[in-house]
Image (cartoon, rainbow, N blue to C red; front, side, top):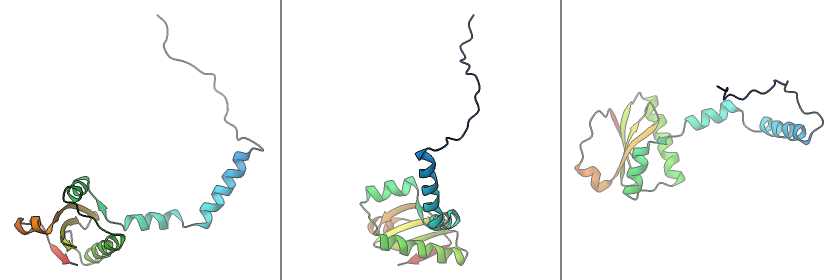
Length: 130
């Protein structure tokens, strides 16, 4: 019976000397150093509110759209609610009700104004009307 595995003789991995790749690496590294640090980029991205797959589906189904200004307002509102200790909230803006997990900075679901009128929200500890 033959062995189905393939063996390659081991060879040391050495850096490529005098290559255009090295110059590209140093140029790319200097561009990164000139920009924002990883920590600041991570902090900025973690401050943004995310939308769950369920919320995205509901937004599409109900034809709800938010501008960049609306999303910035939402980010700011969720940050202020987190400072006050909110955990699960309803945020009503632009004739849409958003159920938000403040701790996770995630929109759980979304509904338009006419759908929200008929619903009962449970396990909510705070609300904001924008």
